[in-house]
Image (cartoon, rainbow, N blue to C red):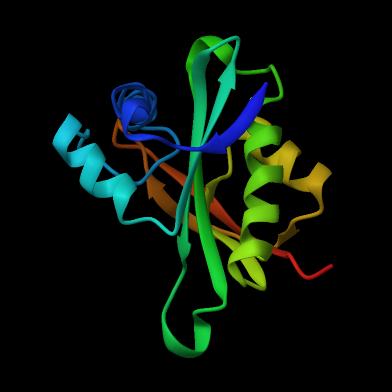
Length: 161
């Protein structure tokens, strides 16, 4: 398994993986899927996009960008997507670990997640394992695809440690 910077030839697979998570409506706030042109524009505007390859196949990705501007511009934000048929294979851990290193390389001091859905047990377990700090709970902060609401749990990680 290798995590590397994305290439334009990865965009179709990246859009498929991203869109799968969007369509599931359980983890990402986005409601609209990406076209190939939309994917090129979206991924192209990030500070960094990493992809995970396993045996020559793209199985996951992450995006990394500032969480805010100006005096809060040292805080990064990231999102991760793993193909549903490859979940449970530590791909997410490879992506998150790589993003922490990439934050350091880009000069970010903190990695913050604004909206980790409280019933996303695998993500919560991974973030705890890697040393992320929970910042509390926002009740009913995430509207799921079925119209129900779930709590969200913001997290942060000091990448300077």
